[in-house]
Image (cartoon, rainbow, N blue to C red):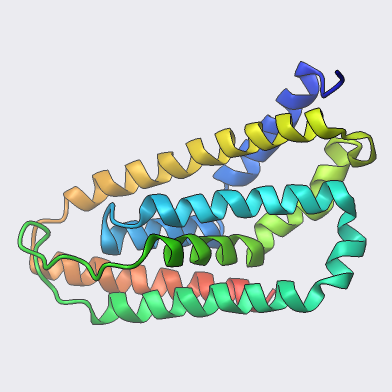
Length: 207
């Protein structure tokens, strides 16, 4: 058995935590969605984003430069699909009825698979995530020396770190959402979240 050292895993976890915590289109999408829709769909959406990190990790280990060139069209399609979904959600938020949270109609139910795939597309097209795995990861670890056990360790650390970061942002946003008590405030939050979501979509589509 080989794998990575504790210090190597700790360095990777620390670097990933800094990258994941820093605001970007993915975090903006999570915050805007939770503000506009509440808890509904948050787990499926963030789960898709977390798996997207595993996909990028896998590509880094397999040889990102070659894979990225070979599947450039696929990445471009995922990027625009994620941006299109965020624009769709932004439009729905802008048009959402202005009702106080305790009397607001139940949010439109979206399938968990659809939300998962949307989160995956957002992560795959997120420039901040790409930068970490394309540029920073090879400077933190020697990806050519990662074996099966090391990859499993990195995957578990990745899911743990991004899971905690996403849970933190969802929790904080839910607390902030509970402070909204008037219909007018709900309308402002919905439209503000719509603008943030649209901005995240533009950031993803144009980089």
